[in-house]
Length: 478
Image (tube, rainbow, N blue to C red; front, side, top):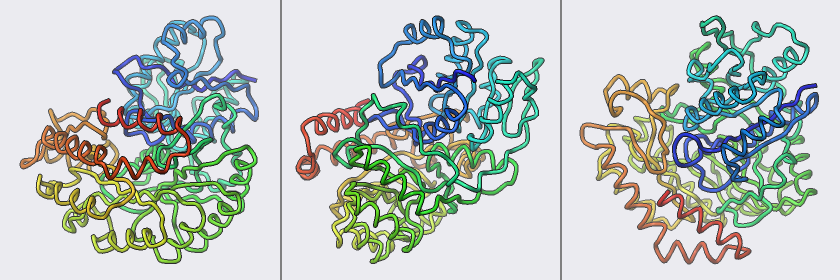
């Protein structure tokens, strides 16, 4: 049996910690990394597992390394995203300086794409793509001191050479996975300002998305799967679903544990009316309030009615723009008319709507198209409006387009926080102009009397209100 520590390291490189669940922003409010907790649940079936979140526990680098020196684990696992790659590489070096016999295993999209950078030394291994089966096979070999170098789905360095193994076949039976090991983070209070009540957790009922948006990185697990699958198959991976019976079992389990709110992290939560109805029935039964992400073309009147009657407190709609030329260019697969229809249906059944707008997804974008989209969004009086700037994530079609056309500042991708930074320069729209438009739009929206009054009426405790206020401050000003 191995001692395995899942580590969220403190900030060494930069000023703010990366959010590792969505993977494209800095932390605004604490969110459980449900993907990492899922992996931890698999590992603890056979090994001793600890979860050390240095960010939420404000554990310094010095305090962490002291613990590593005094009580070294056999294995340290880090879920790495683009914004955390350099931080996690430096943390790996320091762990190995302190505990040279320990192994460091890096998972997640950052490690999957920048794996050569992550090969710090010969006791560092990268697990690519979907991690559960690969990591378990790797730990079995390490535990038995057996050769592990031929395991599918990993990369490593040996004798100064990078080795990259074949892809592991994606899991078909998600129902066979244990529930995420949320007990490992039971000492952390998580909150979601959109749900405004605690205790809160996240949950996943499916993996991946079939749509072809050129820029999209829906979640850190999806991104890791797509990077790996596209490298070997040159197309997006298939969607995997949990059965509605298993989803219902987990919801009832969470309710029995006292959970009051769930944020579903599926890239797309709504697939059809039958599946949605089955999940809504158990949410209604348990009284849990919840929210999800969905496409506008998935919102039918029966769907909107189900959401409204089952405690749904937000639907995140990724619309990006109200400009139909831009929507077509980015292969969004929707029209502005469908956006208006979805919002009307949700509002009809009193389902709070959050619109996600993404600035700069296309060279067709101008100051005028951005201002027009934001003006139209504000006029709809939705519950919340989220505005970010697109990033040319390596592994996406948009990245190749940006590289080929010279749109990336200085010609080199660097990870950015999409909530405030841009490395894109179009001929008619610079990165600084996009950043300025984003900041001005956020200030005018989030500090408007309409938004403030509407949100304040929904909080169930003063504590939840103060934490939401802190989150807003971080989002706007860092």
